[in-house]
Length: 155
Image (cartoon, rainbow, N blue to C red; front, side, top):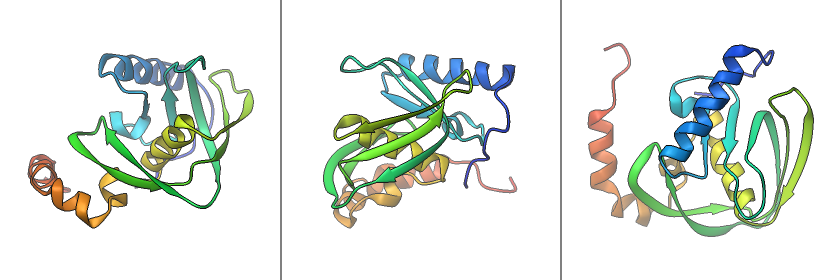
């Protein structure tokens, strides 16, 4: 489901951002979104990489280019599941930082893909929702095992 916008950056949001950074580092991810830790808020973080500092993205807005290309992706929420995901190679993102300052970034590389991946989590979309049929087939057993292990609504 879609995550809720952050209405104000308070102590809870600041602690959530710290938790997101800690979790991403501990699990060797490059980014993670609040819904992955059970918080329905429009927040994600991206760790430092290729000379760029770590950043929190609060209430991000994403503008994408066309056309798209395939690239292999994985996800901390779906261990052992990988697939080629079609995404535009260029993205512009505007968000607030942890101090409430708005910023805009642009990327033609890895960050464009990471922003899109984490933004998908804010909209309730997982990589398995974007996989090509062949990749879903290859990952069929792992997907089925995760679905069986997932808590069911109302239980």
